[in-house]
Amino acid sequence: MDPTQTIAGTTAEQVADSVEHAVETGQLRGGQQLPPIRTLAATLDLADGTVARAYARLRDRGVVVTQGRRGTRVRERSIVTPRQHLGLAIPADAIDLSRGNPDPALLPDLASHLAAAASAAGLYGEDPMPHVHAGLAEVVRTRAATTGIPTDHLTIVSGALDGIERALAVHLRPGDAVAIEDPGWPNLMDLVAALGLRPVPMALDEQGPTVDAVVGVRDRVDAIVVTSRAQNPTGAALTPRRRDQVAVALEGWDGLVIEDDHGGEASGVPLSPLAGHGAHWVIVQSLSKSWGPDLRVAAMFGDATTVDHVAGRLRLGPGWVSRLLQHTAWSLLVDPDAGATVADAARELTRRRSLLREALERHGIAARGHSGLNVWIPVADETVVVAGLLGRGWGVAPGARYRLDSAPGIRVTAAAVTDAAMATSFAADLATVVAEPGGAPVV
Image (cartoon, rainbow, N blue to C red; front, side, top):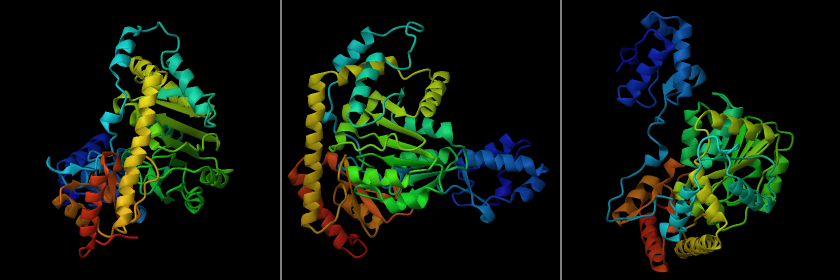
C-alpha cells in the first residue's frame, strides 16, 4: 500500500496519530519507508515544518526511526509489541525455562509484613518526607555503604526500570545515544526506543562490559547502562578488577553512568559497584528478584543533581512509591527470618545454575551464567534450536529478544531447573537438537 494513502491530518499531531494508527492496524509494516517530508507535505497541502514535527513526534514515540539519507522508516517492531513477546508460544504441557522469573517457593512470605504495613498506613500531609520511608532509607543506606556505594543522596523508585527511565529523562533528550549491553535486557531496549534515544551496542563477557567496548562507545554516547550482576540474559557480573578497569576507561567522561543492580542477593555473587565514578551517576538497587517481584521498590543512589531531579519529578507525578510497599520492604529487610530465607534462596539458585552448566559441559555445550537466574547458550540458529527443544517438551527464550548486533543464542532460566535429573535431561535433548544440521552450537 502507498503510505500516503494511510496518512492524513492538518496538524503535526493529527499526521502523527494517523501514521501510528496505520502501524497498529497493519496498514504500514515494519521497515516500510515513509514519504520524504517535502513529498508528504505537498500531498497533504501542509508546510514542510508541520510534517517534520509529525515525524519527530513519531520518532519520540518509538514508532519510526530516522536513518539520515535513507529517510524515515516504520520501526521493525513497534514499542507496543515488547521484545519479550518474540518467539514461540509454549504449550501448557512443556517445561517452561523461558520466563526468567525467580522461583516463588524461594521467596520470603509477605503476608505478615503486608499486614503490619497496612496497620501503619498514614494520611496525606502527616509525614514531611512522604516519598522516602525513614526506616527503609536507613536500612538501604547501611546495606549500600558496606559495598562502597556513596549514600549521601537517595530516593526510592518503583523498580529498576523505573529508576533507569527517570535518570535518563533527567539528562537525555530524544536523539541522544545510550550504550547498552549486547546481548542485554529487552525491557531496556524497548525503553530506549520509546524515549526516542539511540541504542549503541556494548559487548560484554562474564565479567561485564569489556574494556575495549567501553572505550569504543564512550565518545559516541551520552549515557552508559551497566548491569552490576545477574545480567540478563548472560548472567555476567562485574568483578572488582573489571570494575576498576571500566572506571579508569570512563575517567574524564562527562556522560551519565547508570548501574542496574536488579539481581540483589539472588545474584549469588558479591556486588562490585561502579557507583561514584563519573560526573553524573546512579545505581538502582531493586528488591524484586530476591524479596518479591510485586514489591516494586528500589533504592536509587547517585550524584546530588540527578537524584534531586528524579525525586522532584517523582513528587510531581505519582508523588511517591507507595508507603505500604516501602514499609513492607523495610519490614522484610530487618526481619532475620526473611533474611535467612533470601540467603538460602541465593545458595539454592547457585546450585541450580551450577547443575545446568555442568550438565551442558558434559555434552560439550558452552554456556555463560556466572550469576543470577539465567544462562546464555550460543547457537548457530536460534529458530532451529528453539523449535527443536519445543518439540521435545522444553520452552526456552530465543536470543533475538536480547540482541542488537551480537551473535545468536538462547536464554535458559536456570532458576527453574530444580534438580540434577532435569538438568541432565535438558542437556541431553539440547545436545540432540544442536547435533542436527543447522543446529550446531557456537563454541
